Structures are given as structure tokens and as C-alpha cells.
Image (cartoon, rainbow, N blue to C red; front, side, top):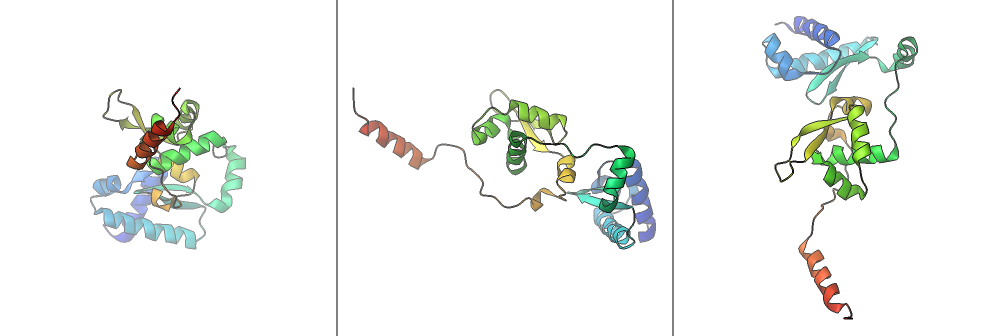
Length: 192
């Protein structure tokens, strides 16, 4: 397929989809290599931006989506009376941060890091479609694993999770030095 024809096909698919479409899926449908999809999408993204088109193609990890140009967001919102991105409370934002950096993760792990019950925040983030269930952990009780969604990337203006700012990851668990310290404190405690 010629590059211009491939770009037209991508435009039609992304317009009709209204949601992110995986490059791999488009490559299978159009019978081309995924690298050709990425190259055509990049070229199309540049072309639409250069022409200051009212629509843009955005990359969301390994998928693409058509959306309105940012400079027309206010007009689109006013015309369609669409909602603004979901408002997040401090606890929801904190929970979402833990999930984004430690995904896939369980509610128990989130609660270990945060130090408080996170059931309401997890439920609210599921409702806002910023996170989703990602299977179950293979341990007793089989707790649900959570991960972020493509909506998370779109709301925060990210193309992939690699764009998240660097943080120092916390390791939850009992280390040797912690056990030694606890044993010393037990031995030094006055007996009653």
C-alpha cells in the first residue's frame, strides 16, 4: 500500500473508531508491517499539525486515536457541552499515582503504601475509567490486579507510561536489617 493511501486508511479507521486503536490491529487489517503503521501515523500527525488542522492524531503507547486540536478544545466543549476531565480528590490522585508506578498492583499493596483504606478511591477510579482490572494475582485469595487505561494516558497528556516523571520506588517488605533492629529492640526492652 502506498504511503498516502495508508494515511487515508488510518484517518478513516481512527475517525470511525472514536477510541484508541492498536497499531498491531491496524497492521493486521491493512496487511502491512506495524512499523509502516507507525511511520504513516507519524507522517499524518506531522501533516495535520503543520496544516493546523482542527483534528489531530495522538499516540497512546502502542495505539493511536483521532481527537480535536487542543486550540479548539474550548469551542468543542462549549458546543457539545462535554464534561471536563474527571476531577480527582487528593486520595484518588494518590491512589492513581501508586497504580501508575507499580502496575499491575493490588488494592492491598496500594493500602500498604498509602497507609489507609483505598476501596473508595479504587472504585471511583474504575468508574472514571482511569484504571481497570488486569487479572488476578496467583496467591491465596486471588486479589484483583489494577492497571491504568488509555484514558489515563489521554487525560494526563501522555503517549506512554515511560513519560511519567522519575520517582524513587518504595519497596514494601521486611528486610534483614529491619528484623535485626526489631530483635534488638525486643531484647533491650525492660522485662516486667
